[in-house]
Image 1 (tube, rainbow, N blue to C red):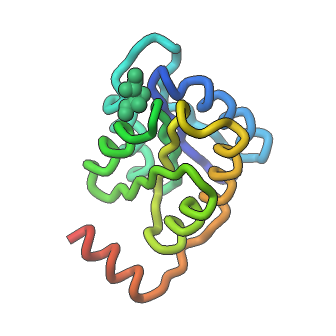
Image 2: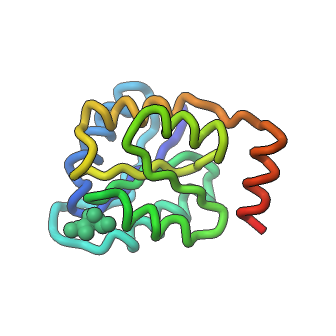
Image 3: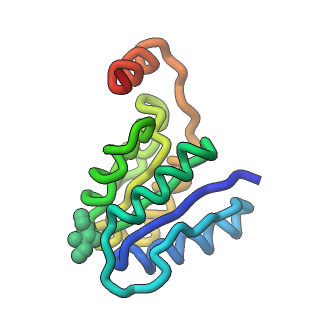
Length: 143
Ligand code: RB5
């Protein structure tokens, strides 16, 4: 069973619940790293918690805040994390193929649940291309 970590702030809480239900239905083992209520909270806390789990367990993650911007900025501060904020299916597919992104960020106030589900599906089902030029560029980011 493929494990996936989900986390959000208050603004992403409802979309996180929708995605969790959907992904569970598809057979994923969903780990909810919070937030656990819609009370106002700080997205870097949840970004950091999820990034540590993704690094430790080598599995994908999804982060959600209002725009997806703050939480993706926070995630990309963590070594080994390549978090891509996507608002369309093409980008979700491309960031897996080209960037080997290990975390998808979504903006719950920007992207509706129907499109978000399509983006998540593309992200999770697209493998890294393993092309030499993409491996080289990712290594340059890491260095
Ligand atoms: C919360 O109001 C909002 O600032 C946050 O969810 C996110 O959009 C930040 O980038």
